[in-house]
Length: 247
Image 1 (cartoon, rainbow, N blue to C red):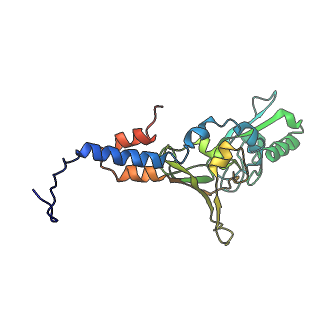
Image 2 (spheres, rainbow, N blue to C red):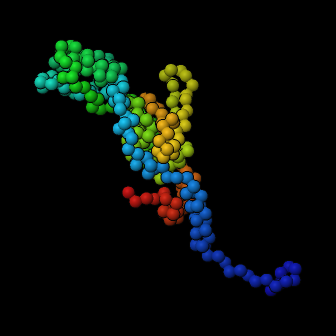
Image 3 (tube, rainbow, N blue to C red):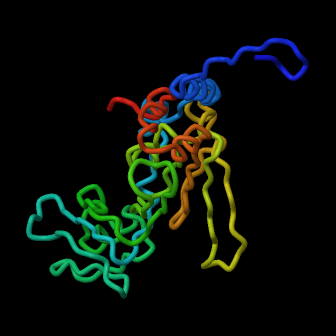
């Protein structure tokens, strides 16, 4: 056979589809690994205990949180009760003290004063956080959901508390939305540099959360590509680029 210019030419053998797919996967994998995995860094971080000092003490109690109260040497007093709609706690023998929008320390001091007892003999803790939530969206472990707000913990501490983020999470696409609906103000958007937080100990963007904040965790390009692939090809691609890991 001859080419259109009169010179000879030969038909090239067809490249098998598996070879072409392999080339594409390798190219995508090479691009994917330019972004470090932050899901493992989130799990490996051990600074939460230091960051969370004082967080529980700053939590403001609301209806219908459940408080547990005990008094040293007085097992007949105390118990657990939910904060009622009027902001009070029904403790029977201890009466119905007002606890709405108070910290557990303030509740403790109020009960100690009413009992004329030393404050360190009265113990109050939040047994169930039921009044306020933080909302999770995107590449977090589990489904998008509301989780109990437990005080002004940092974004990293919240992500650790809920089980972490997926291997497809993007370190450069994490945001906190603070709506300010109740205050009638414009919403705030905070960009969270999770890579700097976990790998450089740079806490400047590790925002402390407020009730009803929304946390969005975006996904990497490789995660987007994986979801666009046919189901039969997804496991191979996920293993190749690190989206599938052993527990």
